[in-house]
Image (cartoon, rainbow, N blue to C red; front, side, top):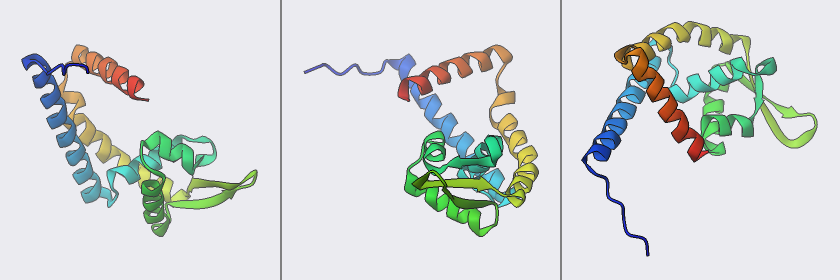
Length: 150
């Protein structure tokens, strides 16, 4: 049996700092989006990914993978966005099991209106708090963590 490698003080400080910062940033962004656009953060991310995709559409499985969410969680978010007319689902012509989520013009407009406030909140909560050299280190370190966990 392998012995547990407990966190030392420096490692605990990094872990706790990451937890607090990530939770507070997420809560701030969720609050800002709800108040200013009526969207949840996951819904905003769906709109962003679809807006960036060719023909503004992605297969639901690709979208779930990109959002790091379950298919059922994505299905719920897409359903909420469909009710608002921001997204539509369509069958894949080459795979009867495949479903595409497609951004509507109304969804694109909602994203266009939500984006400035969201970017301002991202800047206020994270980007503008860090010095340029710190931002580079954070981007590199978190990128490495994300790559390892993929």
